[in-house]
Amino acid sequence: MITVKEVADSLTLDEEFVRIFVEAHQLRKITITNIVRVSSANQVALFLEVVREFLAGFRPSGYYLIL
Image (cartoon, rainbow, N blue to C red; front, side, top):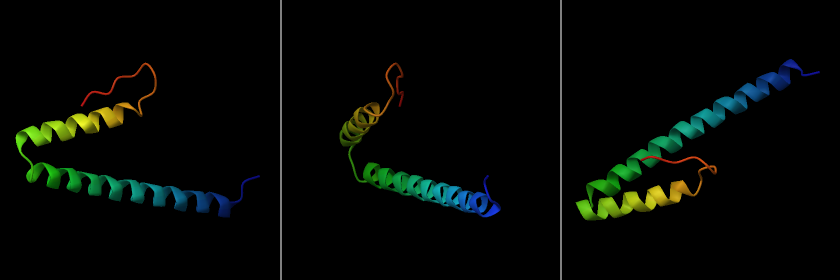
């Protein structure tokens, strides 16, 4: 049987995961924006190609990542 405390602890942990995910997303967005801002168009294209290849390595078989 699950106790009320276990449910509360689980919800607190879920909220913490969401907070961490949101902060990480904001940091990624800021980092990519800064890289793009100080780079030439060719450097940006190369950077995004590497990011695409990196992320494609995480896709499940049979799925395609479109950026």
